Length: 157
Image (cartoon, rainbow, N blue to C red; front, side):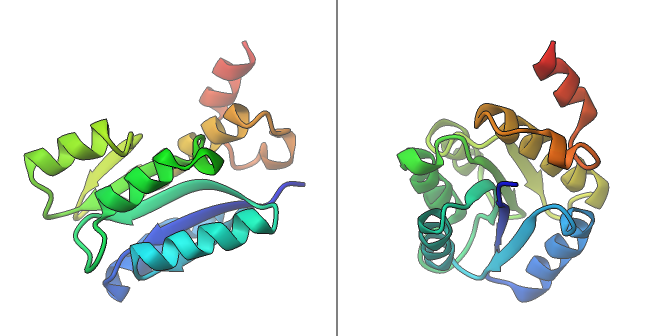
């Protein structure tokens, strides 16, 4: 079975802990990694890719020291290795221009304002990971218990 990873990025440990808690139902099926900066996330992605692992989803805060979440997700979207990787921006401080940049440059699939609803984040993550599995042509069957059945049925029909 392929190794699928979810990378969560936020410079505030308490926010990162909340995201990890909300995604905990996915832990039995996917590797959920946490990073405290964009550079740390990019380094981890390089390592995982070199090991032949897949990065299905990156969830990033926007306002961080160094690179912003939009800058991180833009780099991810422009890297041929991660073209299919799904991206979520999670923030409480983005301006209207930041949101437009995230959509146009980073090609994010979803945007959540803080505070977010845990069930909505989990549902979105499941749906995006399901899309990723099909986009990559992976066998979805090992993950049928956790994948979004609506997406599975739509993609199979």
